[in-house]
Amino acid sequence: MSLVARHLEASGITTIVVGSARDIVEECAVPRFLFTDFPLGNPCGKPYDRDMQRQIAEMTLDVLESARFPQTTVQTPFAWDDEDWRETVARIDPEKLEELREMGERRRALQDETRAARVRTA
Image 1 (tube, rainbow, N blue to C red):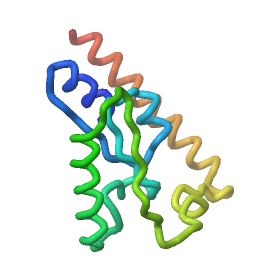
Image 2: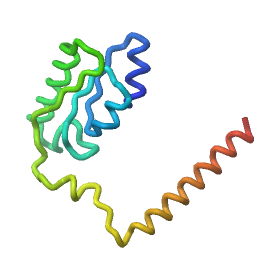
Image 3: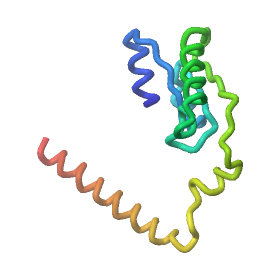
Image 4: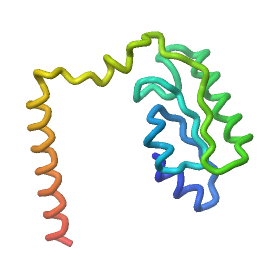
């Protein structure tokens, strides 16, 4: 999404990214970024919390209108209910580590095969 925003900006279309992966989005140098310190997949607020979602949408429009400098980042004031979400959301069970490693190796091998097939047919 960040690279798409940069491409659109280069074409004269104003953009703002609303997201939760601050380090990644800022590394991509998007012009405007509204950061929510929430689990991935929830940048616009908690499910079913319409008031919070509306406030985040309003903040998004405010930042879009008011940002004066390149690579502006604004953080929302909201907090996720479960303060331990960082420990539980992306937790990898140590017993599953080897299985996950093997799955990743199989996925990368399949991606390599797919790329090689595209090169052969091109």
